[in-house]
Length: 437
Image (cartoon, rainbow, N blue to C red; front, top):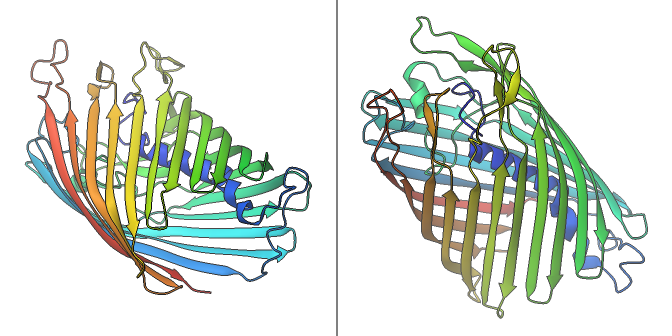
């Protein structure tokens, strides 16, 4: 997302990626649903995945994540008051999933996600904190297996505004760099997004998924300018989003792979009913590889590339939206890798690493802000322990580094630039997965 929208009106780039990845999950993750039960004539006759059992399965997953970060500037880094900053976040996400077969040819999946967050940034003149539940996401997916050679599905995902979208006074400084912590925003409006698609088994090992979705976003309140007393609220309406997706999933022996391409476009976004911008259309390419070397060693590699076209912004009269003069949106690349060793007693351990790169670093004079280029690295380790067939414990830690390039002074505005900026963070988490059926 470019920075031409009013502060707080636009979703962050991390939020956009999560939204798109969620859409890809609903539109493409069902590729493997039938793989385990596929027969040799799968291209001719779709497998009946309910032949094994009609039982419902209920799973609960949660963890507690602790972040501690410090940097040469607080967040947002382009504020004239920003100085060396540090902050902490405790984030406890949870999910509850229910899956079952209501007939020999029809399967239902339900997922509920939510959590709680407590965050604090401590920076000279910009210290703020927040403790709040996050928004709740509910999704339902129905898949039909009765047709020969293809399996249609319908999904609906909703966002319930149980979090806090408006942070008044200094609380607004509790929003922190999403490259150092998991969350940048803590709530938005009521959203609903249906997705319709079809799984097409091309062979016993390869499944293609085609899907199309639409997300209707509801309005929500954000804090207005802090210079006014009392501080006003603003009514933000982010643009609705349409997405089409093509995904492939492959599994054969020790190798598994998946890839997808999604194209999305938005309607205009408004603040207090006045059009502010229209986010540029975007393409998200994602994929992953997994390989089991033997019964103990396995490795994974996954990542994505996000490209966003130019936004539409107000013209000189402020009445029409026109394409911006240059593309203020960054290209974004993210890679994640990991290696695991599984002991015979149910313990798994291994190192993990990730890399992220944004390529844009351009001054946007209409917003008096920079679109920053940034590089992010992380290294760490994960571990798990299967206590029994129902309970698995897991833990993870990571050390994160970020570097943001120098921002020179804006023309005619001496002192607005900032030097090279670096940040560091530690993340430690522990959680569990429990099969409740």
